[in-house]
Image 1 (cartoon, one colour):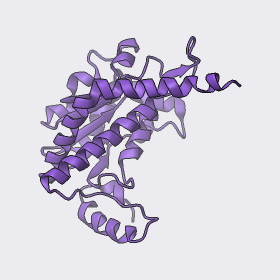
Image 2: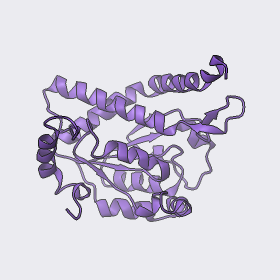
Image 3: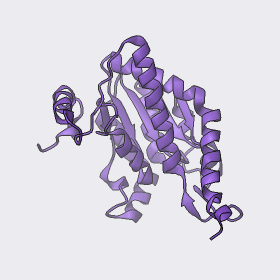
Image 4: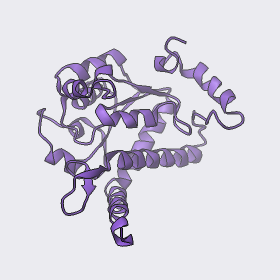
Length: 247
């Protein structure tokens, strides 16, 4: 395969990363500020997604270098690993997302982060709507392009209920290869993970400027990591039952 052909996908991904920087750079800083305010006030970050957006829920929860006061809110039916067709049905079913949010009972000074590339299925929309109704600011990580190109299964979109929107610039259909007729190489996880990493970097800089020590997990595979994490577990396990359910 010629080198030029191998570079087609990397080039398109880098272009999309640049688009995200241009489109959402300001919003990323705003999201970092909202998160820091919530953490300083003792709030929890509630994180949600369905289907493959659950990869981003995993990326935010109990992650080396990530925030400790993060709670995943989800319904097991939206996980595609043991029943993929069920997960699609569940995120399209009215009421599932609202029930998840109601069970988590977010309240100020908490924050919600909802990941959904299209933001047009009832599940993420209902979670965002319910959180916003409870006075909890919502950070939506979504794609305006993908949302415009998606089937509208709700009267509103995820972005409509968000205080801050991080536009990942994912194209409709997610895939980007080959360029003329894309059919493979989905990029939503790459772009959403990059957006979240940028939020964490801005959050770190902002916290340092304010003199705030962020509660962050340390890799359990480095010296001293287990001791740091034990302290954080003791601090947050009563607010985040998913940290030690059944332990």
